[in-house]
Image (tube, rainbow over all chains, first blue to last red; front, side, top):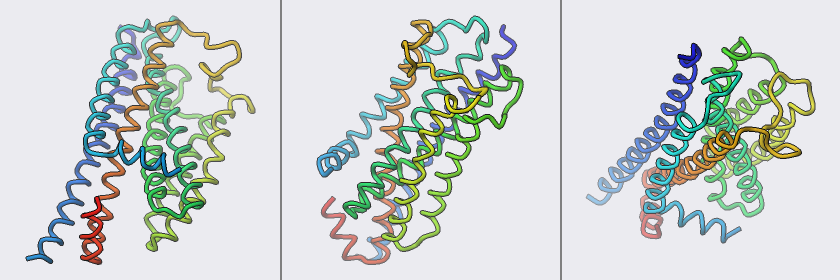
Length: 46
Length: 245
């Protein structure tokens, strides 16, 4: 096996973690923002 | 310009976002298969050359992201519509991610091929400057509280900062550089094996779909965060905006 294959594996792993991690972070931010807005709105109404 | 904004609005609907997410995922799987299985290893560099199928698309998408920041910044200064500022902010954040990824992947390729993780080569140095410029752009957005002032200052940085993009691209032509010259956009056409070229072009297309998906998601986050602030500050305005959406 190519002795440099570790760099290749690391590169694809970093790409997957960076893009996947960013998507998960954005989904978490969206959930949190919606929750915050809903809490304020429900307190005001109720 | 309004037509473009309306088109973007349709793409950022939840169903549009989901469809883009699925398309991006499929494209990434196809790209990974072509890059890691179908394309042959490089005759000189071996397996590590396959990093180019992610490094080059990441660099191109960084350019595209900052071009979108530039266009949206000009549109904001012209129209003063906050929607353009939201688009610029979203694209800058994603552009920083792609730039950092391109630098990291280049370093991983550089260590076995050049014998070093980093060198103060013109292409590498101007790319590092690009990352710093857009990190400064994001920092300014965080420190300025007034929304219209923040949008105005950010738009100016988004326009001036874009000057570095052509400098990065042409740095290998203007100065003596260790980095290789353009592979695709060269006089006489690309000089790489057909299956390698296909893997590279599919990689660029897949990353473009990923960018489009990240933009829709990031714009939704921006809208939700603004709604949360509006609800907290002015309940009536928040309710009206929510009803409009």
